Length: 470
Image (tube, rainbow, N blue to C red):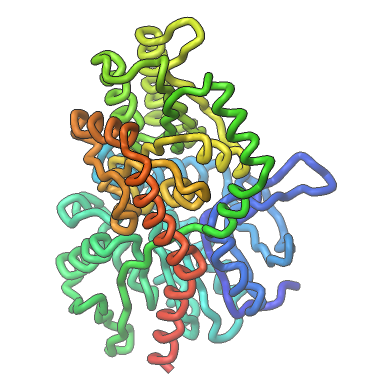
């Protein structure tokens, strides 16, 4: 029998991946969230509720690396309708400024409601009296309200990792009121950017008519009273010290030198690291780079672009079409620009371990982050944290949450291809002193605002909300 927990994290996925090794059937999955909440969970007998990643798998709660994990079962239909359907073909494109057209199906919504209830019931069953529950991300927007109805004794937080759209876009959602009411079940609702929190507050005023002032929202209760919900920005970050530690390892520095050598030791290596997703601006980046080569402003003798595009949602039609388009573009640019012994683009449709990524960060002279819309973009922060040598330049889309913090990056509007081309040239040709000055300021910012600070700030506000309700 599982012991009730004083601190419960609820997310779509558990923080582990299944392996084929009988001796070690689970491995910790990458990502900063578990790093951020791990100390809190250990102090408070914490539990983590999530899907184990495979449909139809029914597992009892188990312990991994000192963490209590509570699997939630999803059927193949649940994965298709709730996850691939409503979460990733309705909410994801809608919340990313309709870069791709969202699809609205009532069957998807029904599945979303059903699965959210399953997560809420699991959290209710494993939370101790008066516990704190922290719900994460767009797949579970209905859980806060469902959980409050089941367990009014709980203190509930919700963090939204992706953007929240402007009201004119959000209003398209047929179930807009239900989603807002779901989120308002939380005591603290966190967003990546101030603009996202503002968009949410405007949607609440327009749709529900609730009073919103300075991030505080007055939410009517069933007994005729009013409670306060806080909605504000908590920009997420990374474990900067971990990246610095990896970047200082001699074997990783040797691997970085090996990568440069394998690419022919060009004068400049450009790097893009993204999930293969239409929000990441990979097409715009390739177009700008291809034009720079065609214009003669860059030469394959001097510069190469390494593009890592990790597989993503490969069963969703939009993503299949995107992969085909990207790979055709890479092939065309290489066909036009390559010479014997020189390649314009090294395209890698793979995921790599963190050690290899840090080596790539150290090897790259310019990091290209050209997302069309992104809640934060932690890759930008990972690159900065890895540059213990003080080198490197960051070209950063102004449509990322990271742009609010990383002010010394070269900012770009990725839709402006001419401006993007000029930014790439500025990064390549930047004088060493300016490059070091910018990177020093960027590194200071990432170190001072790491993932531990992010979780501490959110949980402090959640604790204050608990005290005010007591």
